[in-house]
Image (cartoon, rainbow, N blue to C red; front, side, top):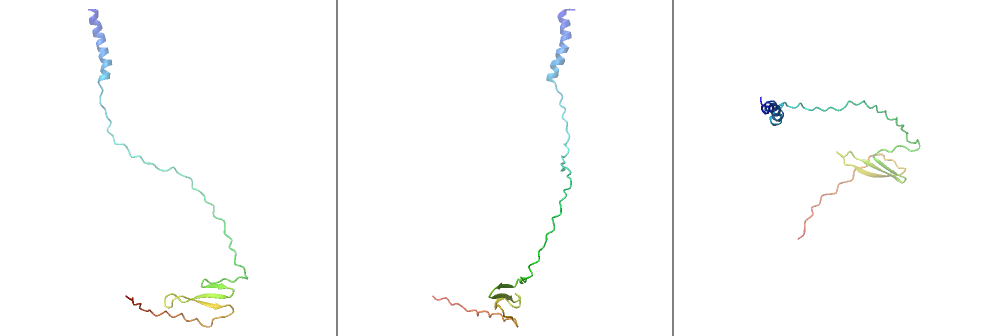
Length: 120
């Protein structure tokens, strides 16, 4: 056989195999749904919080008596709050120093409502 024919017969399939791989590709596409991504926080060691130190309460000095919240005390006397806020309105009464109340003071009278007539 002719050497040209032998070369063509041997070289042609090799060239087709090499060049055919560049031209021909099979389309294999994976069609899968991705799994959901679940993120969990890393486990943490429990934190031990020390208990706060006990608070020492100091009682008031024995020479100063406790004053109720319905009184405002001055050296000359005191203001004292009377009334319950429902049946009797709240009202303040001045009580001079050294005096004591034997009865509850009567609440002040309310001013009479007066009608104001506009003048033209």
